[in-house]
Image 1 (cartoon, rainbow, N blue to C red):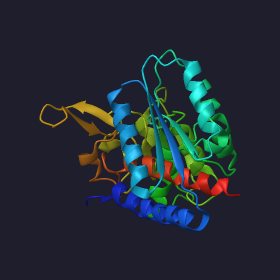
Image 2 (cartoon, rainbow, N blue to C red):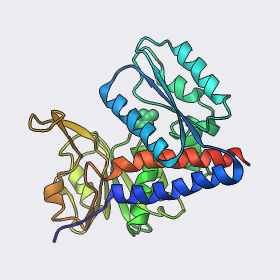
Image 3 (cartoon, rainbow, N blue to C red):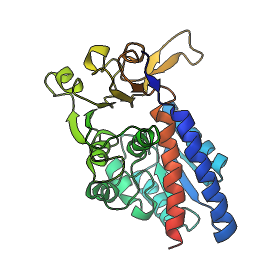
Length: 294
Ligand code: GUN
């Protein structure tokens, strides 16, 4: 039997409608418009399209989007000065610096310069430390999006064995931490696998919920999935395809067509985790505007 598709677009739309209501209410009752500063340095095509999608999503739900596109040769000092300016701007509730940054800029220094009250990406050491401790903070967007997909699809994480493939700071590490927190969408037993894991299939086959965040197509094949498992594909790999309009297609980390015959539920690529990342960025920006009222 074919797996149920977890529709990230549909779940995103639900959450974005909730955020639209919240934003309207903030404007009507508290005269405050949530504001997001988006900073892009350089001309990377993928980064440009992500940033444009983020700005468009802000406009759709009524968030003020402050667009900052800087040339490739921007110095670190110039970028840090811009961040300081946005840290002190009361119209701005969230600051997003699109990654990767050009090589001459120290990304860690830049992320650490963002005020923790405006770190809506949730990438700073303070935000990630609080996430690990289970303290209220801005949760990193893709990990939080995955938790929301599971919760809103009725997948029980409580007592489940979740195997995460990938140990990045952006996805693997934070999602693993969220999944074992004593909280809704948590309480799982979590195994983290990575490029040095010996006999990866022996781990993935034990997963009730399998999260593929390796960034490599075909990382997970059908034989690596326990029948009835829930499979979350975080991969967004651009694979060349001359027949596609853009010359490439997006492919996840899992062999979708084969695995959908084994799994009970699965996220597609595109249309699964991807839309949730932007949605949770909007969520954090609205949350930050609410926090500013306190
Ligand atoms: N580059 C790829 N994904 C992300 C993201 O979620 N946030 C930022 N700032 N940069 C990214």
